[in-house]
Length: 289
Length: 263
Image (cartoon, rainbow over all chains, first blue to last red; front, side):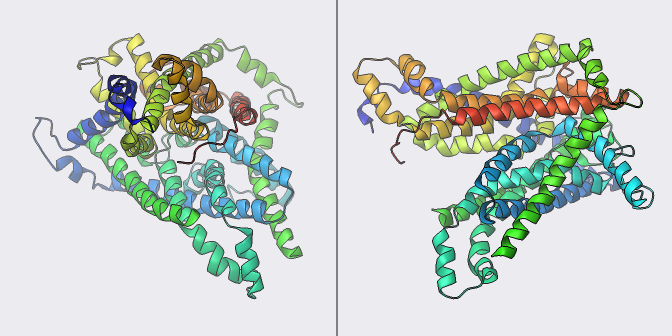
């Protein structure tokens, strides 16, 4: 482009990029490294594996496990429902105006998370929530007493998380579905393929990498969430973010090193999900050209 | 083909029910404060609470600072990397992906350990310092969204040609960025700004662990102490989010549609 200018302007260029790099170092790299080193240091300052070994207690493993289950379930269901709704809207010959309205709403709902979302679900499916009362008066069925439902449980939290997981899936998968060309459908039909065969052998194999990629994004999204769970269940539900929150607040585990190990374990799990995402996204991009 | 349309409508209806029922129920619940009739008492109670105004104002101010700092950090970096240092792009992509990988809760834990009152840079040693740390934390949190918005904005305009043209006419670097590039990507920047605002305004985790009187911790406090106000606050929050997202949509119509050099 402008190779002759490059040399002369170098101080400017570095100066402009400097704040970005400084931010990355101060607020991303160093804090992570500090936790990493703390996770492998004992109280006396020596290297140790004790903190990591300390994670393998019933309470902590149970916290990781329920977090993984809630994140996995809400990611999987969110991806399935999001895919179904997006397909219905883009490929189902619904009015075009509906599509833009739904996509705008998705933008709002995917950001409507945290504390207010918990309030909304308490007002809907809490013991005194509208849906709970309506179901009881109309069908005589108490979802709490007879259905065994509890908003402050695994399924309650999963159902609540779906409110931002489904729209996030819809926003990320819509471009991939748009990328399915009409011609492919027509070509398949000309060759005598049924609708089912088109999706089985053409549509879904092409969408698959994007779906899998978004799945890991949704997983990490739910795994790191705390505000909704905190406002919904307080410390009732022993998920790993709530455990870590209590540790930061007041050293609930009574061992700072163990707290750091807990945090490092979380980073490990979310990065694993995102490594899958990166690998798969690179594959998906080749298809989408 | 008829059955296909039927299924599409059915899926849409089920989805719509899941998303609309909680909103409707929350709204109905928020109107029930006065016994036997619907009223806006819960909203009146929220708006008359001085804590509401104080925490909301605090979060708005932090949000505005976050947007300004975010723009100052991201825009020059994206511009120069796109123009002169494309080899830095993978690094930027990696950095802006990190806040999505590392949970905010983990990051703030790192900040508290690293920038405690006895550390080299004692951010949390004073109220002012903690406010700065909170702002920086939010800039980091919003980085993925601000970066993508600005990067998309720069992709649609031809920054190479614009920069060369400005240089030929004798503009200096500050003039190029301030008078040529910024106005051209203003819509993209504002989109990033509103998204940042939507993220920051109700944020709970970081504000609460840094002990700042922000809107998020205020919401949790109300949630544990009151019955109808939380529902009213949920509706208010939804309207704020809707407003921020709506602004992005409106702005999208003003985005420049010049044919860009494909890169």
